[in-house]
Amino acid sequence: MDLASLGGNILGTIPLGDIVLYVTPFHLFMFVVVLIFTALIAISRTETQVEGSFGTLKDHKVSVGLSEFKSRRFLAIICGLATAGAMITGDLFNFTLFIALIGIVNVGIVSAVKQIDVLDAAYQYGIIAMICSLPLFGGASIILASTGTLSLFELASMATATPMMIFGSLLLLMGVAGETGIAPFFATKAEMFRTPGSPFILIIHLSSLFVIIRTIEILLIIIKII
Amino acid sequence: MIVVPEFVPAIFASWYVPAIYAGIIIAFIGLIGIAIQKRDIHILILTDIVGLAMLIFVAAVGTDLAEALILPGLVVELAEILAISEILISREMRKSNKQSSLLPLPMVLDMEIMTTAPNFLVLVLLAFGAFLTGFTGGAVAGGGILLYIISRKSRGLPIAEIEGIGGVSGIAWCLWIIGFVLFFIAPDLWLLSLFMAACGLVLKVASKIGLIGAMIREEYNRE
Image: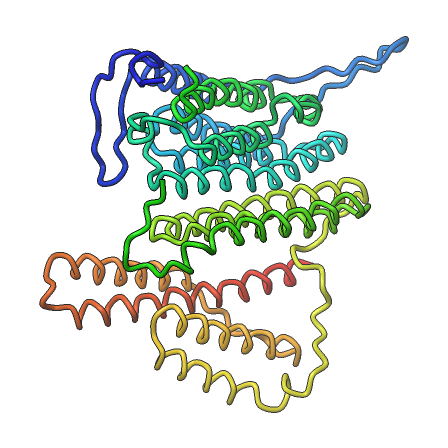
């Protein structure tokens, strides 16, 4: 598909050497929305959970300490900025690097919690994220090898998609699925949510939602089914 | 469509597909190992094999651009393995309910070389590092500093505190950047800028490796 039918009229290009960024209303909207969410997260405080026990009055609060709160807020802001970067970038390899950064930071956000179950889940998530960096970067490099460019602007202007490009983009989809923890790998991410500190934990989820949309756009640019 | 320049020998271009197959086979071996292993730490180490296969995928392209992409890939791999090992450490600390140091090894290095001639070796390493300059020289000189700290530690002697080693590193970095900028502004002064960059880099890398020793020492002082 061409760029205009996917993201609206091209508002302009930003030539930075080899990397030509292009701006469409779609990218701009996603970029601004992610930045707004990041700003909201940066000024908010964490929630405090109350764990009730059945039949007694021995409820107890699970709160987040100050140092943990600070490190978690910092990582959540980094995650938001990485997501915003993945929304606006016009270079395939920068996109994969932003995705990998999101994967690392997601592990980091929950690394300081006290619950052992959550740490177990974060460990499993991290292992999957590390394994999935193979299809992620491998897919990008196969696309580079078969087309000679990584710029999405250049890829969109190519006439047809060779089988190698389709193979590479499918690998890229597998990599994104593993790094952000969507469909086949979602169980560990659901476990990671069982800890206090709501707005910072939610950026894990928000980033993956935005990244899926952007990935589908990139796949449509490369594969050219329609 | 193959975009290979004419001056590249045909045999290089034909190596791409075997390299991809090699990467897939290595990743497969790593995944089999992960499936068999039961201990978490072994799984983590075996996952690194899959990461190396990723580097093979990127390196197989073999162009300048791919060369520029290997470094971020390597950094991502390292950052992920650090983050996950941090998770493992904090989980084990939660389980056993006690704090442990960053490097839980006893510092008893019962080797003769630690007591006989460490000072001489350190001097040789520092001189050789200063002679080499650049990244390699920094690594050699930093290894010398590290050897000095470890040998003092193993002999039970007090270690001279070098405060502000981070400041030296920062100044060296500035020297490096100034030298680098001078390359582009005044290409006539290439020799001066080359030496500025090289000397900045030797100090930078040496102080970095020295810092590793300082950090380990701080960990042991804490216990």
